[in-house]
Structures are given as C-alpha cells and as structure tokens.
Image: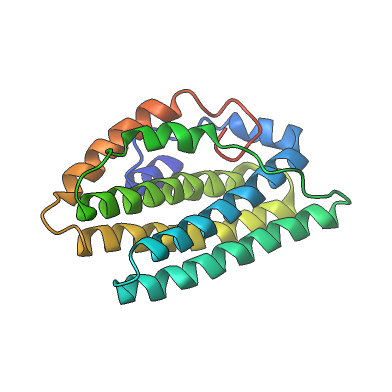
Length: 201
C-alpha cells in the first residue's frame, strides 16, 4: 500500500513530507527522546479519560490496556536509547498537540467533551501511525526500521479504539461530521510541521 493510500485509510488529508526522515536521521537521540515522552503522554491521557468517565466500564477496561501498552512502548523506546549509549532527555513539549487541541470545544455537554477527547486521541494516533510507517519504509537504520513497523501496527489499533468509542458514546453528537471537520483542521495544522527532528515536529 502506498503512503498516500495509507493516509487516506487513516483519514489524514496531508501526508508527511518524506524529507522529514532526513531530519530524523540527523538527530536520532532527540527523536527517540521526544518519542518516549509522546508514549508517556499517551498513557497519561488514557488514564485521565478513565478518571473522567469511570462509569463507562468497557471504555475503562480498554483504555487500561491502552495505557499499559503505551507505557510498554515508553520502556521500549528508552531501551533503544540505552542500547545506543544515551540517556533519556528531559520531557519535551509537543506544539503539534497544542495546536490540534485548539479545535476542542470549550464547555459543551459531557457527551461532546468525551467525543472531542476521543477524537483528539484518535488524531494523534493516526498521525503517529502515518509517521511510524514512513520511518519503517524510509529510515536507513535497519533496527529502527523494524522497530517502527511493529509500533505502527499497535498505533493503528489504538486509533481504531478511540474512533470506535467516540461513535459508541457520541449520543446526539454527529461524530462523523465532527471527525471530518477535525481532519480538515489537522490538515491546516500539519502544514506548519515536518520541519524539526521530533516525532510530530
């Protein structure tokens, strides 16, 4: 499957510029550190969603597994850093996620808040999956090529989980319309990225 068709499957409107891979290769330590903290934030987000919606038992059970998997990924990335003789750097901020979150409605019903929260998580997973796939195809480092292929599969499953729960618990929210609008927003946001040696940079 081509990169373009994979992006379409995920709903993304704008694929990552392949030249981003060269930036990654120029500073592997920075990318791995940034990636590790992305995994930690994903685990924290899953836990935060559980705290906010404890009455949704199937969501609680599934997101518990997601949180565990994300922390396992954190550990796997830290191990890659260690194998190369480096140490994990300080936590990185993620301007991409900050810009994405500007789409989230302030206030609104509990259903609307849940849908937006789940769609934000799905969007992050979709873009991460797309970038992992690009790395699995284009990076020269054979170890990381295999590593990112394996992570890509897991990220795609998480994307499906978040989208599925948004539709399940959307209630009166038109989830598909909201997702379509969010994809358009992401396409505008991502135009300013792909220029730094970070996972979403």
